[in-house]
Structure formats: C-alpha cells, structure tokens
Length: 235
Image (cartoon, rainbow, N blue to C red; front, top):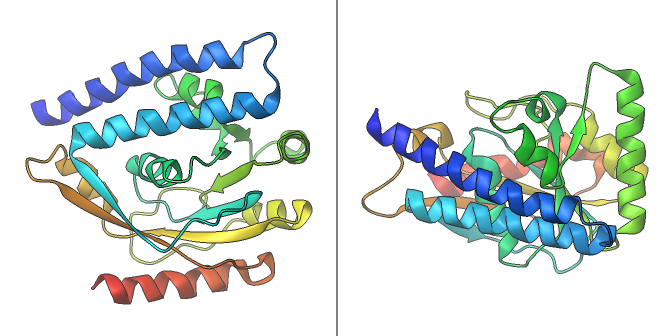
C-alpha cells in the first residue's frame, strides 16, 4: 500500500513540476511550432527518464530507431508505463514528436494538464466534427514541423489479455493521409505487473523491440506478425 502510494505521489509531484515547464513553452509568445515541439518532446523524455530511475526500471532496446523522421510509430498498449518506456527509447535519438491520445485523458483531473500542455494531440472518437479537426491538426503540424513523428496505440485502449486486439482505423488513416512510413514497436512482458510491483530493489529490465518499416496497406497483419516474432524471442 505505502509502496504504491509512494510511487504515485512521486509521479504526480514530478508531473506537476513538468506541467509548469510545459506551460512556459506552450504559452511562449514568440516560439514557433518546431522548436516548441522539440522542447516539449525533450521535457517529456526527461520526465520519463526520472520516473524510470525512481522505479529502478531499465529499458533494453532491440532493433534501432530510424534516423529519419516523419514516422508513425505504432505500439502495443498494456499499462500506464507504456508512454514512459517509449519516451525513454525516443530519448536515445532525441526524437521530436507527439502522442495521439483520447479526449478523455485530456479531461482527466490527474493527467489532463500533462497531456494538454506537453504537446499531445487529442481525438474525440464520438464527435465527427472533432475527428475532422483532429486530422486537419495532424496535417497542419506535419506541414509546419519537418522533423515531427507521431506515436499511437493502434488498439485504442489498454489490453490486459494476451496477444493484440483488433486495430482501430486511426493509425492507418493517419499514415495514408499524410504519406507516413510506419515503424512497429513492441513492449514485451506483463507491464501492468511490472508497474504494480515497482519500485524495485534490484533493477527490473523491460524489453522493447523496434521493427523494420511497414506500410499502411497491411498495417494490422504486419504488426501482429512482428509481435509474434518478438514473443518467440522473449520466451
């Protein structure tokens, strides 16, 4: 109980500190979109690195992030830790980018301001007009920020079971509409349990596999094939 309370308090207090940092960039009257996203991306990565250090979790990376940008990264989703783990991976190449997140996360009393001011893009799946605005925002952002990357959980929500849930259509539509290459990433293991048992006395290692570029035509099938290949290596 106290162990769990301690990590949540640490993450919330640290998050509040970073929200203030995000706001300085978010509301800066003279900063343009590209340097703003670069700064916000770096701050998200710094926050994530500090959380993982507190939890005593180390990320082992298999494969390589591409040097080029304007990539759509598709990632399996299991726990609260997933974004933090991926930001740690992105830090290795200082990638500039934005997360696609549901509107309900922006509305959250706990996480809302973090998502809003850290440069994430919200999507309201229940609002047709909101969806149109969402796709226009992505296109505009990619046009103005030439080193932008996009990160998305194509399943649309956390999946507590085995394997991969059916993908929602968003990832494929984003890639097709903006002619983006797609890179699959798999976070291995039962991440809910990893987070539940943190922080660790001995360093806990989390494995992340980065795949080769795939296309939107066979996005779901190609991702699931890559996922199965990592499962075999993880056994």
